Image (tube, rainbow, N blue to C red; front, side, top):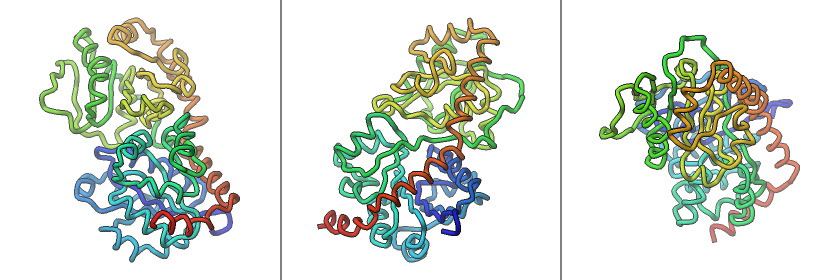
Length: 374
């Protein structure tokens, strides 16, 4: 630590490539926020071909990004940085995550944190004894467990899984990157997201079927991995991959944007997608499916439109006045700018670091690690 500036190491799924994952944009906003507050971050990313071929941020200006080839390569090259950092964060879905966590915990005596950007998925995996990137025995090793999901899941993490200091650390939006561009509107309703089988029925109900019923309106779906057999209506434009640098333009050219939530996130509740915050920051009105907690973050009818059916989508698109649509967008943007930017989230994170240091729990890790390995 230099003065009030922290040296932080983050080991995450990806920062360099947003292709097919939501982690990169989440990390980018948070790390930009930390940089704006004067903190230094080293991000360690496993060098894998599917991200190496699609890197849209190979050289970030807000942190140091380094690649490693495997656990032994990471520990041999970055052991000193991991040992000396003021805080180390390991993210969910890191390749060989269990081995990475054990290696980092063996090296480090200072504060160690887990950032779960996939909390409902993680808990489902652990319930099925699937330890792809996190072992149940490792959860108590962390001085705090930061969760993409809030609400009741935090109590479950502590009571059922032994997490210390489980706390919500929602995704956030980089206010400098996401703002209205002023471009003319091209689409009445749009959606951005990687194909997911459990989201597809909602996408069919809330965008594809409305497009069939409103052939004179224009729709757009951006994102990779959609099967070739999907019957897209002629008035639905497809964009295979949209890099983050083009997201603001994409949102700004929509009258409404659609948010569709994965089933496990709906079940957990309190799991806002980064797309909600991005769209709101760009001044685009949002239509979303419902999950517990959504109307607390963005009140229905005031800062968002919650829809359950095709009929509700059609009604919103055909009956909402421009004045009403813009008022909803303004209300959402005000809430997001006040509580969900990268700088706001970075301040929350630094406060959690300080709380962990005050708790004095880090000295317990050596004994916990020995017990868990026994």
